[in-house]
Length: 131
Image 1 (tube, helix red, strand yellow):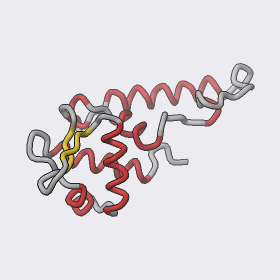
Image 2 (image 1 turned 45 degrees about the vertical axis):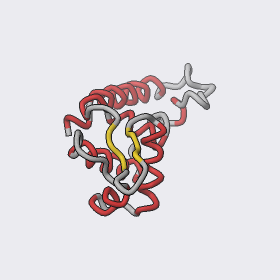
Image 3 (image 1 turned 60 degrees about the horizontal axis):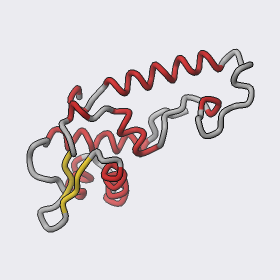
Image 4 (image 1 turned 180 degrees about the horizontal axis):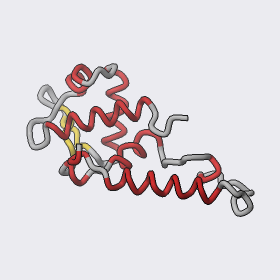
């Protein structure tokens, strides 16, 4: 089971790259892809998701590219993860979309919820600025 999927790992790498360059010029997707060993096509899709989530801004044109929309310390890892793969769920039984009908009777449910709450709390508190 992967809590952080491969595409999400690539998105985190791309966002860390932008964080290192924060306050400078926009960085093209091609440069991000090359420097972070991400295929160009995948990098384009991931940056589009980051843009839709409001985590980056895009600039069009020959000198265009992407930049963080706010300071690295204001972007937490959970925001990036959820922009790529949706809400974090340790187990399907905890999913808000498909709640398990046995949830209230299940002896595992409360422990799974504790694990999920811990992960969400940890990832919400860890920012690009920390990295």
